[in-house]
Image (tube, rainbow, N blue to C red; front, top):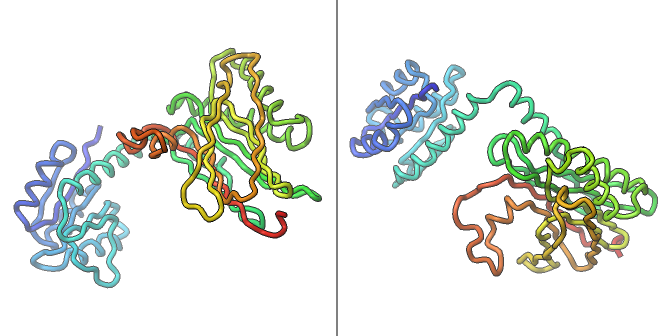
Length: 345
């Protein structure tokens, strides 16, 4: 594995030594006390990261940072630290104000180094898979009835989560269709399952939209049947399928081991939680998946989220929620904002 290089352009002996102590086990460290010598070091070593103190004896550190960022031959991540104020046209990737913590700066450096190493480890096939998964994500929706957007955040490169939504307006029917799902795990094998899961859910939702399935419940039961017929209990997952009927102001949804949905009433700031109970897809061949209907009168926002997001939230009744790692699973969510308009009446 290639060891990255870091250049420190820093006249403060104490700060410079602390950076070297904290980062010396992760990279080759090269140091300079002045801006000019620092520019020469960067050219010589082509470091992954350059950390520049703004208070240099020969020029402002922000000038060194901007020179490097404007150079087409330099591709380092530039840290500008010890900044009291910013002059015009300053360019850098990370900023730390005066006074700053070397410990916190080094934590961010470690994250950047890990990202760089991960990028170098990506194979062509992995990058193609990442591009394919990202290309399947829907675009935001904005119309007279609703605003819809999403979060899609893999644990690392590829996600076992997936989602889709689309708006359909036909005659007197104005509806939003969609689904959100979560495969077990968050590695390459889960991604492979995720692609199949997406196809099965999309087919079932299209059939529901076309009237082939009389209910979301029937659609979910057909998906569960496919899991057993096609994968023989080798694939399991949770999901929720939904349909907003804007004319009737109703939300129809069908969960499969999906823990809850969150919603907010008009004029309120706190989200309420509707607890859900149902079987895991692929767990029991004859499982039933009851469809539920929610009156959206007075509701302003609804969120469908996978466990990866719910587990890091501070939820009522669960004081331990949101404590621990900042993120430890794939995260995905669909955000629906309902517009309050006379046409919804």
